[in-house]
Length: 124
Image (cartoon, helix red, strand yellow):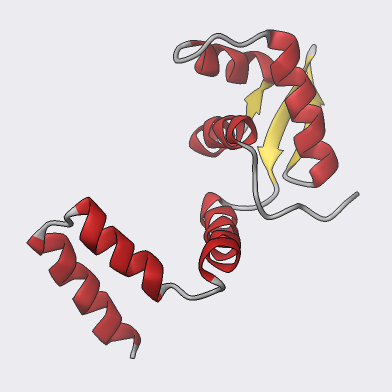
């Protein structure tokens, strides 16, 4: 089995979100959940599940007539890796420019800024 790549494509991430939310899911479960919000073919979902399995993001087991997919890593671990990769790629590994950008462009609420300051102080 290959090592899991850190970054997921948008469709891979959408599939993983369904699996993380449910704990485990069949291809049909995933297809139905995704179909509520976008047009997607069942065969596309199954192809992407094979890709995710090859990349090491999911494992599968046979149950009755279907395969049941489970994540190999938690959402928290995957998101942390994706954020780290984003910081490396866009901001040369520094979180400071990202935080400045979020503060300036997103107009974070005072409550959220206070919470961020509290978390920063706790981590020191």
